[in-house]
Length: 368
Image (cartoon, rainbow, N blue to C red; front, top):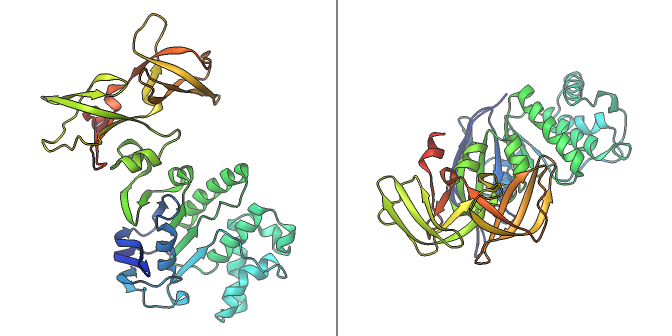
């Protein structure tokens, strides 16, 4: 069972503090959508408003054809999985999963079937007689997810459910969630500040910042063509290098940018006549840079830190004017901190931001 979710002109304030300002969004039936953003951006509040744990000041929320923002949480047809597992310690796994169904008087035979099927789906059938104290963190999280599955909701809501797990378990559980969605085909909304979780799980990512939605798109749309400087800086590891632009000169479909630390850089893009130069910048991702071979001349970079990641090496350094740039080299890089290397840029993959933070992208990247 899955359904569309329509969020229309939602606003929320606590006294004088506005948390969400006129948010609108449609989530398709069976879609996995991730709300991504820094702490305090309003993503968890929006999720809790869908669940009915926070009231709606303005706007409406509908699931399918039914408006649900006026309904109590138990009548909305959603199931929520929290950051904390919130399992009853004196109950077995089976009892924890069945408890909510017992409260709404589902027949015991039906409860047994649902619990068994959910446990098999989550591969925890062998744990049904154990109590939470005898489970690992990952197993407890699966029980919490199972408790949501047995409700057969129209939509699943996940509020940072992996944050309490260690790195290895977090990675494994992330993949299990993706597989679970493929098996169930349910509408799922997942809240996180972790971009790896968002990029791995989402059909679409909703990037939130400062009470509003910055951009909605597929993971690669968000990564390759960020709509704003905030999105470009927030999504990607390592972070995109941002260099100020002092001036620009357009000619046909090519613009020559005067970039601090780099000088004249050509990019195949069109900038509008009213381009706001005050505070404008160029964004460069590390994978769009490379270390030149001996004898080639590019941009000199004084390397300050070398980060060896196995398949690639990241060089953190400063340009001739002291601005920082992160450059990617091969996993077998022999560069050491303190060296000066010559760096080349892929000028077909640059991002330009005007003074308001709006992004512009190269034509080659758009067609690639």
